[in-house]
Image (cartoon, rainbow, N blue to C red; front, side, top):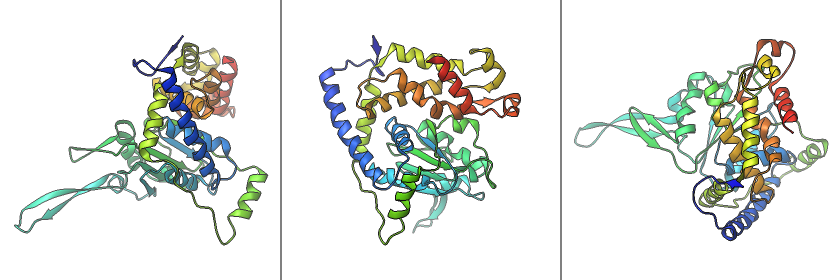
Length: 335
């Protein structure tokens, strides 16, 4: 028995036909990204999962690992109107959202006119987001959750689809500010980017230091992206997968899990984590050519979905434990 994301009746033949068409588009997307981003297959897959699931993603890694290049490439291949903001300590909220300016017409009448900021695009690249102050970082809170912003009491809707793909340097580097917990929770996934394998790095050396460098090409339109996102939300989810998601997320909360969780976790993921796991598991299943997610999808996505929605106790951090260690332990116990 399974449940779906809505109460509409799903025609299996129609679903299969739509999934096959989507798979063809996804295959071409992966190929297009692969001509520019070498190696990092897991990072590319998780980034696509986040976008296809309709969410935002936080890419974390040291400088020079092609985080910005990946976001730029996704914007091109997905056919999105992409805007980039370089976050700096002196960046103000109005630099992101826009502001009202006073104008005077030919008759001498004065009035305010709203000038939209770079957030009014389908893909916002928030480059080095943790180099701006918490006040400026919080300017994205309403946009990321409600898909509109309020300026001087007036509501301004954002274009659809709307995605924030942010890059972040490790917090231990100089000149960084930790993101507010409320904003971290609005990211569907935190995707950690590690150093490339030697074969991938060799290819990077050979193909990016010549006269010409590969450039991404558009594959689909934003309208087609929204159709695939709608298909993913219509995919049925087996009840066993729903129970696995609930059990895993709840086991990461103090007071609901084991004695080890109570000892090591200061606060755990909320219901938004369960929603994120459900959507991401559907998207990963479609990327893999399946019409319904499995428990393996849940376990594979547990780390990027949960790690930024948890905090460890001082005792756990003093013992050198990390959030990823706790998530790995919870996944192992759930298998």
